[in-house]
Structures are given as C-alpha cells and as structure tokens.
Length: 387
Image (cartoon, rainbow, N blue to C red; front, side):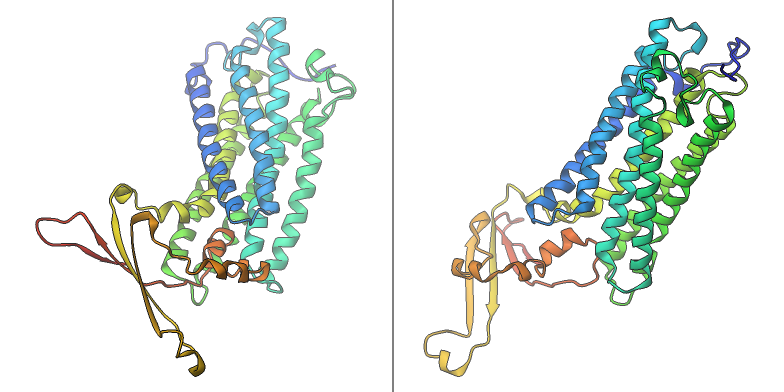
C-alpha cells in the first residue's frame, strides 16, 4: 500500500512558467538541437583526424540517451505533464508514467556518460604519473560504478518492469519505483547530490592547466571558456537539487508529480545538454575559429617561403631556398606528394593539427609564418596580411 498522500489542496496554486507546454517544448527542443550540433561537430573533427577515443564513444552514447529522453519528455506533455495529477484520466496516467520512466532512466545514464566523457578527455591532457592523472583514473572508476548502479535502479525499478506504469508501482518495486516515501525520496536526492559533487570536481580538475608553465594565451582562453560553461552546468545541478528537496521529489505538500515535476525536469535538460556542449566545444572550436568567414569568396594570393638546410654533397642538385606562389584554394601547402608515405602512425600524433583536436588545451604551439595579399584592394593600394 502506498504511503503517498494525494489531495486537492494545491489546486489554487498559480501555474509556474515551467509547467507551460511552450516552455517545456521550447527548452527541450532547442537544447536538443544545440546538443546535436555540438556533439556532431566534435565527432566529425575527431573522426576526420582519426583520433576517435573512448571519450567520443561516451559522448555518442550520451547523444542517443538524451535524444530518447527528450522525445519522452515532449510526449509526456500530451499526457498531462504540467497539470495536476488527480485530474488526469487513467490512460493519461499510464502514458505519463511510461514517458517519465524513459526520461528519468535516460537522464540517469546520460549524466554518467557525459561525465565519463569529460574525465576521459582530461586523461588525454595530463601526463602519466602525475597526481591528477591518478586522480582521474579513480574518478573514472567511481563515476562508472555510480552510473551503473543508479542506471540499474532507473531502468529496472520494478520486477517486472511494466508494473511501474501498469500498476503505478507495487510490492516488487523499489528505489525510483518505491511506494514508500523514504526510499523514493532518498534515491532521487542522493543521485542529485552525488551528481552535483561530481560536477564540481569535473569543473576544478583542469584549473592547474591555467597556471602551468608554458601555457599559451590561446590555451588559457579555451580553458576559461570551458570553465565558464562548466559553471552553468553546476548552477543547473544545484538548482535542480534545491527543487527536489523543496518539494521532496514532488511529494510535498501533496504528491503531484505532473505539477511539481516540470521545474526539475527542465533543469535536468538544461544541465545535461550544457554538459555536452562543454565537452564538445573545445574539440571543434579550434577548427571553426580558423575559418575566415569574411574571405571565403575572396581570392587570396599566398606567398609561402620554405628554407631547408642540406648537406654539402646535395648542393649541386638542390637549392637552399624555395619559394612557391599559388592563388586561392589551389595553393599546395603540403609539399611534394611523395613525402606522404613517410608519415607513419607514430608521427601522426605529432602533427600539430591532430594534437589540437585530441588535446585542445595543450600548451605547445607550432608557429607558421606566411604573407598573404588579397586581390581585393582598397582604392589603388594592395593590402598585405602577415599570418
């Protein structure tokens, strides 16, 4: 028998903004689109440089989870999400419980996956043997165990699972499906609290890179951007925990999950999608920032000078200085095609472009000097640009 109390006492409460269908759909759909753009861009960059790793696999699995969860939340609105639970018809109640089951389970799994992706991404940055590297391994293991444990509780809240929505719970339900207030509330609050602590740890881990010797201005700017986005994730996580505690997981002053639940659901969407953006932007932004969008359709004359040192016995057949001048997108920046075969797998990860996608916070910078002259002149003078 359920311990929860249902009543009409809260029917005179004003409708929160978060309960309106346009708010729920607007937040969920826009966040999902942003998440897809950022994650897809990240995966494209990693695949293009053949640097796909375990962190990318976690992000890919996260994207599948958050997509299924977002669809479930949008459908839940048609089953009464945002309205009072007691005015729902039987078919609406069952439909809401089904969509809530999917949305909650995908959120629990998705939060673990996106944290694993960030921790594995940090693992590429810090050298082996240092304290932070060892700490990351511990956190990766702990987050994996935390995610597996709570994901099982979310995906299997009852035996059999369909009792969760067919009977609204029962004697064989526990944790997320429990009919007793104590374990039900404790499950949600403990997950939200641990989630907030992990978000805080993930946020402060890269701070030593900011003060690392040899850190460039570019790497510091990227780090500041990463931390700024991480703060938003942490704010949403804390705010969500506050709403869960305030209404005791939609059970106080009366149990009304469709009325008190939307604010926590909206914050969960904002938190997890902001985390995916935080994990993806540092990977694809260096590539995007190198594109000169204002000059895509302007022909450029590029002069590149390469100076090479040779042995004395090669002087009779090679020159010391070589100058190439090509126009526009036809400029050959790669040198002789026969040299491509010399690039082995070991040298591949020494390439500065590849390294910038694998480790966007690296401190080493390869400098290349070139001069470019635009065909588009102001007045009668020609404009020279030094890169």
